[in-house]
Length: 395
View 1 (cartoon, rainbow, N blue to C red):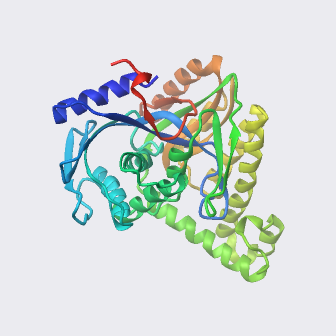
View 2: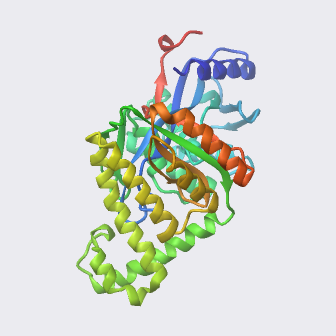
View 3: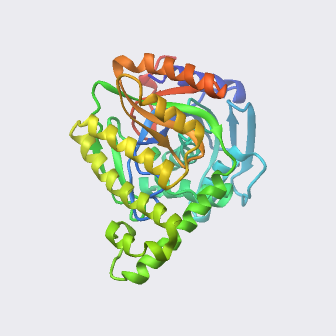
């Protein structure tokens, strides 16, 4: 059901390049059901691709040395010579793409001329990983059109490296992995270190995943994130000094953590306690989803929010309000902050028949308390990046 986005992007291509695109590709955003801040602590995450996409309309230009982009949503173009070494530029959106090209160029693979127009239904800045969709979508296109023989795992890693090197964000691998590896109706339990993963059915029949965007992003996201990592590293250092036989952080027990509580201090203790409990919750949530135990899944979401708010302390007044008020509504099984924290979205598990009423009530309450118009995104679990065949839509 992406005809509107496809046609919108096709028209953008026609307008930008005065010709017809040869192929279309869809790269999805992602949600994370559960497992926040554990990707750098030997933990598991439970992401899924969603039915919000960046659509790319693409044409190979054999006699050209240029790759030219038209970003419909910004109404901006950018072109670069495929034989030259690239460096970051002022336009942020361009750097996600140049970074991908740079990684592939450095590997010695040959890329030809291209014309690409793209447009998106992934809300930017909402924590749904439009950046990973942009990076990995472009990597996927290059892989397909120029027969680069890159694996899915390599595509995800290329997207991550692009963000590290050309955008300057030291992101984990979850977003890129979910965009590339997503499957309809399935979540991915991913070990962010080894990249070992397995799929679980997302059995939530009768319930919907709905995101409430607080429309706030507090400025201490980056500093707060770094502070949390330092707190955790302090705890890890002492734990490994005390228990050197333990191989991975996730294998420490809470009783072990209790033994070093006085030494690491209360702040590091709380951070590590949250992480150890959250890692276990991911495994429990995967099982609950596969068994269709939506009630227990909802309880786990609530536990995660409590941990993120009181132990890891990355929530904020707006998100705490949204979660607390949503949980009072009929048909709501679970709610939690989703993402790095200090703003962004809550993810909510709501009975289908109550969704409209919950949205109306929470929108009204949030506006009354914070004078902010909340945004709402209804999402379904979707396939990862793929080529969209002409036979699938009507021009």
